[in-house]
Image 1 (spheres, rainbow, N blue to C red):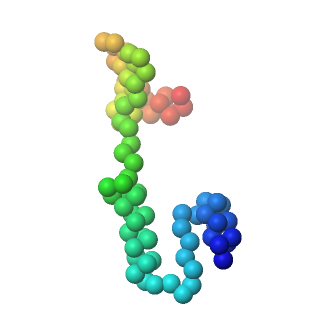
Image 2: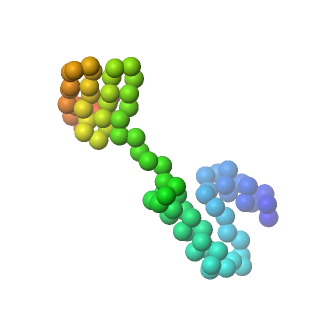
Length: 80
């Protein structure tokens, strides 16, 4: 039923399968989700955030302002 599918997706579901289903369709849907998460369509995480002259590298946890660099600890970085 269409309302069941709409409700499931609006409640946070990514997809909906009805019975009877084809194993080829299930496999294709799983592959599509894996492509979105890990493959060519996956969002690339930004390693730097820039604002005016301030640059924050989220990988190295370094904060740069003009010619000054500050190394942040993980605790400082995640509690900020």
